[in-house]
Image (cartoon, rainbow, N blue to C red; front, side, top):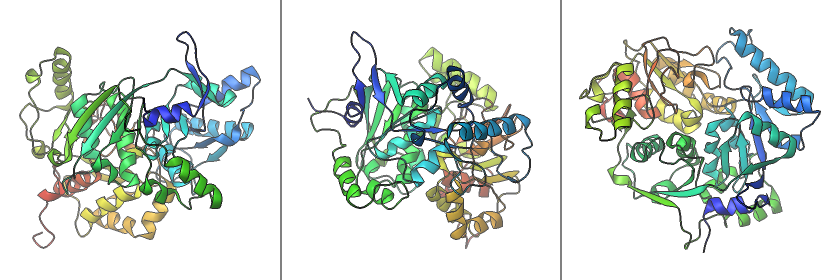
Length: 473
């Protein structure tokens, strides 16, 4: 029987097969690190008198706790400042490469690595962060791990794991012009649920996926974890190779040719069998928005908030009631009638250059609605910020009335100064809308960068198609 993409990468990295139900021992090609989940791992090494087995395969950055303005000033939050300084001391002591604040290669851990060519097809990549699944867009087997596992990888460059189940998510056909990668993944999560991928590595397949850019593919794989999956993957192809060629850590010369020859083998065999398959027709998809407090509680923007009592499953019904109470929304409310206070464009989901270009194209020549308190545009990495400024995108954002920030996780989560206040409502291009995710009492609707930009113009949730033309305006 043939093998799936995930099975091929797994088999190429097995150091020792487990017996009698024991896990396999898997070699790890690259571990990415940041300030939040690494301190205990470093302390564990220190107590045990160990040093990293392969420090050259461990790379760190500062992202979660970083301020996105006044980065040269003292951090206003004492806890954040301590976490950042602790990472800096640990990396210096143990010889770990660090891209910190002010470094041109600093950024969200899942954004800076692909841009440097560190993320490559066929690799095993881990990080103490659930959204490590982002790197699966390159055909890597990439997933988040816990703090004790971070220490284990540092000490041994291996990880004990039982093989995952495999799921194929097929998106067939051509996407409508107004449907983005973010809409696709929100639709997938709405279809299979936030636990639908539990225990699986999802491989995204089909013509709609194959025609996506690498930035779009990273958005898809990034939110695999929101479907409960262990990882998400997309088979590498010419789009992948073109993105990687010439990047600082990509193979060069003869090694490049050898690498591409191997990468081309990383496709699911025709006779391979997945444990589960799900299919969506691209033409039936539409711009999506969440109405509740988990990423699976979403609908097309043209629809209304569902009635919780319409859910047959009692758990879903109760969750919907609680979500609407927290979000202060009523069943039957049209999504397009919901006013918004804050707009956030950024995160490891949608803070890449394609996302910024799309948002800028909608904002250009327009002004934010007076009812919008603030619009934050935060690039996912410093390199993306530099590129955006070279293209003049920063000027478009500022003329629109948005705040152009330095790279970081920013308002994706309440671990830095970019937080919402209680009862404030936002549209966000990030990946989670849990209660209090963006600040205590905050209310979050997940959307694409295009929808976020259009909403910033109108003041209520809408799509770019709802905007009057610039001539009409």
